[in-house]
Amino acid sequence: MIKRRNISEKEEKYIFADRKLVRAELPKRRQNSNKGSFGKLLLLVGSEKYKGALYLSAEAALRGGTGYVRYFGNEENCSELLSKFPEIIAVRGRGRICEENREEIISLAKSQSATLIGCGCGVSDALSKLTLSLLNENIGNLIIDADAINSLSLIGKEGTEALKKTKNTVILTPHPLEFSRLSGISVAETSENRAEIAKAFAKENNVILVLKGHRTVVTDGKDVYINTSGNSALAKAGSGDVLAGFLSSLVAEGLTSPLKAAVIAVFCHGLAGERLSKKYSERGVTPSDLPKELAKILSKM
Image 1 (cartoon, helix red, strand yellow):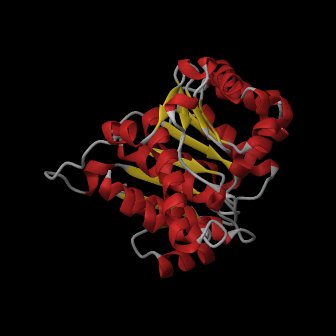
Image 2: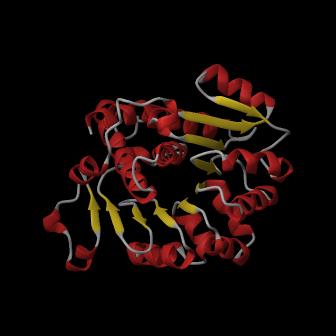
């Protein structure tokens, strides 16, 4: 945990996300409520090659508290997902999550509180086109992760221009290399001044940016939050899928702003890694351990 006395003068203009801040910002669940009170989330995630991303993001979304979690995918993935999580509402489409299903996906997304796209989808031109279609439609909250970010990077300026022009609230969740591909800024250059580069990118491109890594930066181009939780237990494939699903769930609930939801999700995700490390060690924690721990953390926050 970062101690305030160790913060440099340069960092004083940033907001540090710690337990106190997250407790203050995390809204209580209303008791006079029903499943419709806590939003609807659409998952456009996973593929034949990366089914694990589908399971990890889906469980994290369920544990985050959204009233409805929908998954759009092919017959096989829908059946397998339902066998593991019967709470999911599965919508069966044709083939892969791509442009051939555009009209059905856009229609679904417009009726949701938030849409997550990218985790384990595989980088492709088809995913680029679908992500652009979602940006060009008015669907509300759109979280773009992993392969959807990489697919946008394939089309260069067209991708960033779509971000600037969209009417949606967009949250990007790249790790440093994904950010480099999208922004054109090298990993080395970004690492020298992560907070200011993230802030400038978010402001220029009309997004909320979650720049992952040690001391993850969350910014909307105005306010800059520096995360204070986490450790090397999270440095494993699949951890980002859990974060994306959990973050999207908090956004879909609509109990706080998308920016605050991202800050809360990042802090809780890091804290889950810390808590699980006490039981399994930083080496022994797996991403599959994280969703249930996140639920426990929410109960104490």
